[in-house]
Image: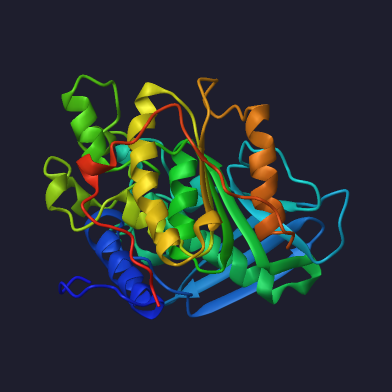
Length: 344
């Protein structure tokens, strides 16, 4: 715990997750608002319309649902940032979420642009990824209000690739109604750890780091700018972000591309995996790094792994999700000075 107490039970770990969420919001991602004062939803054709109101301001946005040709309603569904780049699984609906409409990611000058900021103000502390996560939560709210959409809201997944993969991981971390999080090639700001990436850059790696990433887009809170050149002072790293998802399903899909920091991603997610181990559900979190292939091109040799996670968490089947592989090895002793507890 933040006060130095050891986490010894699953209940205490839930409290620790709440602490980590607060710390990550405060120092990196910005504050995540809750459900707005008013929220209504309507469904017509394949379009779900969500209307939100707060303090006299209102916004409206839509998502498109593509139904599977197999299975029965209500269907499990995957919310896909920008449509996603994973193949649509059998029996699962796909929901196209236009995250750029919620918060722009054109360049650093696009901070404060998008419907989230129309509602909460252009100077809100939330970076784009937090704004997107808020939007995902509102989509789930709307699905709960619109049974005509024929979606099983207890079986929701989220995915995205690259910058949208970062966003998908943040959504899974902050929204407990997401049963399966599927970040693809998320790199820095996603499955990589800031500390490890800085070290690898110091050793000559061509890798994205915290100090570089803030010059690209408004994905993070401006507060993070003060820490990108001193990341060891942060009381968390991205193994902590991933651990917010535990014990729910997380399958991290990575690639071997230098800029994405494949070694950092594998070592970071190796640390994160220990949260699921401590909770006694090790197989609820998997990691697969197969490369090198084109960025965001999903390789066929990861298909069976993806299918196993989808079948387990979205279709309620018993499958083998014991997947943890990489082109690299992780020097755990360099980064991890703890042992996995067994939480009562």
